[in-house]
Length: 394
Ligand code: GDP
Image (cartoon, rainbow, N blue to C red; front, side, top):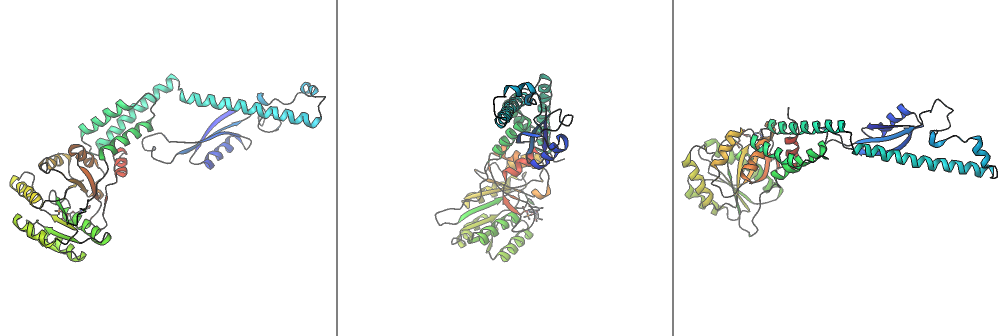
């Protein structure tokens, strides 16, 4: 008896392979779904494995069916004689039944053995698997680095992986542990939380110049005013650049949302007073140079005076990590904030998101994926980000 294993992308493909190799007399012993091994394959659809058997002598002897082997011995003359007293029909039935039972038992034994062999690999196979595992861990590590995950953070992650991987872990188990670990670090995104006491929720957007604060603010304003039917007011304190004021006014006009411009911190209370009937007040601020202390003192005051309910620190995923560290350090005066990442459409590497999460422990909120207002914004999708970080970007 020949027992063979066939793998196809679905049952049909696997069965076709069985038929082509063993012919239509082949017996299917078992069918199961299997996860593909390999770094890039572990998230793809499972394959179908078919274990099939056929009589080795099939084709050499008279074709009496597939079960012609040592377990299904052809009925010998001697045996027939033993059944002389039986009715011819009964005799045949008994033999057939016997053959089928025998067959079932033996096939079950063979299948159990094949399965056991799979779980207990030979020392040689074990060695190759061990090597594969080490190689996989290395590849995962390199992918994190390629994604510009900070070297220390990537190393810490891999150390945890090493400590969690056991002898019995397969490569896809390692991938699953890594996925869990990274998605755990990224955490559950927190979106804008509205006050429930009828007072306006005050939200301030801070971050370096050019990262997309004004555009992101406009996207959120549009979302709440158009989709959630909330009354929104916009305030801009970004008066360093005339274009910034004009930009926000233009968005305000398009969305039918009022805009107030403030030139000094003293004016913030008046501006907020004008919006006391609103559900949400969104405040745009000027980008600060993280080396200019006075500008940061001003921003700190603005956050305090406005008694903001929410602060969003807007960062671009196109920012290099060294720069990002400096930026995060200069905004560390903020008690609490949520992270928004912009320009995901412009970069293949998302390491900065993981780095910033790890360094600040502040919640992720939104990500933006293009210049278009209001469409190009979404709640950070941890699953997608994690898969991108684990998968190769080369
Ligand atoms: P601010 O200085 O931080 O207020 O930045 P702006 O909102 O003025 O945006 C700076 C530039 O970045 C503009 O050209 C925006 O259209 C662009 N921008 C903003 N968000 C995104 C995004 O998600 N993807 C891309 N590709 N460009 C963006």
